[in-house]
Image 1 (tube, rainbow, N blue to C red):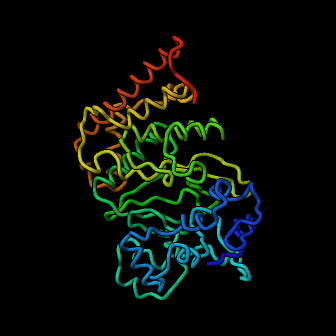
Image 2: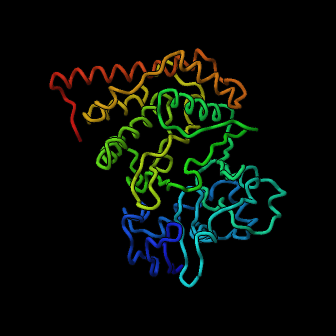
Amino acid sequence: MRLNGEIRSRDVPVGTVRDGRLAQCNEALLPLYLQRTKDVEGWLRGRAIDAHRTNSRLLKKALRIAGADDLEAVLRVHAATITDTYWFCPEGEGLAYADVRFRENQFAALALKGDPDSFNKPYSHTPELTNIGSYEKCWLQRDGQWWMVKQGSDLERFSEMFICQLGQALGFLMAEYLSEDGTVCSPDFTDGATVNYEAADGIVGDDEGYCRNFDTFYALSPALARQYLEIIYMDTLCFNMDRHTKNYGVLRDVDSGEILSMAPNFDNNIALFSRGVPDLARENDKLIELWGELLEQDERALELAQALPVPTREMIEGCAARCAECGAQGIPVGTDELCAYILNGSGQMQAQIEALSMDDQAGGPVLRM
């Protein structure tokens, strides 16, 4: 497919595309992935719905694009998404942002549940073609606001909601979650793309390594590095082994391109006990080991870690109780087990911080990478 046209932010051209290549661009406003790679096709494919999801195949069939690959599918909606202002305007098409931004979603039920009634609807402009991720999900509009709705088991939904509550109790920036009819629901944290969300792969590629990420974010801003540290602190406390460079990222100013902050912490469904009850003592815990390695290798991370808040049993019990108030159907694990798991992890992390701080004061082995 020969791509010719413009990548735009709202109605501002930020990159000209000739034969699939970025010919010229406004570097300050260009998507971060394109700043790093200049790979237009890779950027477009990265915005496409996951073809392995069962309901994505039903959706494509209903939209009469069953044979389309990721590139063709994403271009059906001009690569527009809910959470940023970027889109692709083909050469010769007199389109404006108002023509391509999403105002409704007739295929939400099909994308979420495989709803047969939705299958028979005529083609319409749907954000589901650029709704990435491996879980069955949809964008649903309520009172003029977009909400992400995602399927999950009782344990997965509890994990998402509890980690939201615990992170907020610790003072961290967290995406909001409610539980409803076997799903978790989260309001669009860009508030209709008033800011642009961009995943971390735009900055670090596929490298999930803590040291590389921390160093890269610190070079952009120490405040960003602190917020990144808070994310992996929560991941370690609650054993989120599924953090990858598509489910954390940054918020950017639409008009200037400035990076404002890390995005709120989201996508914590594969954590805690969602894959079974692990060893409560958390011996040989790989995430705690990786956390310790970061602090050992970067004195800046260690300094920031010393100021991180520490969860208490009372805090954990309160967060679990509030999950029920937000729509969860009770705690699917025992409160004692939940407290033991998190507090044992926290105790080991604090011991690492104390030991490395003593080494640092004594002129020990802490290094800056």
